[in-house]
Image (cartoon, rainbow, N blue to C red; front, side, top):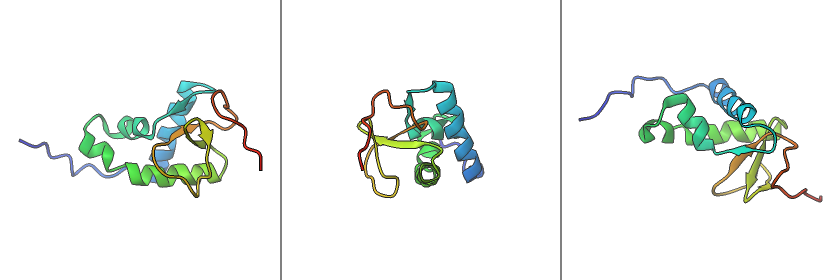
Length: 104
């Protein structure tokens, strides 16, 4: 028995961006969110639905980080949005509660 949710249109990049910003603003300065949280906020807890959003959500997060709207972090440190792998979290810029300042 399967539910037919495939007729639900995929969220637009603007919706993904809004979900990221809404969750980050709600979590407060110094806190980060998982990209999974943003995907679930848009389509619910059905893994088939939110897992389809992970690639588009990552692309939006990278654009936002390049524009300085958010930071992408791995293991609590800010990473280059054009060159990172694996598990990551999103944070508002300047919220360095657990990150180490980069020296470039």
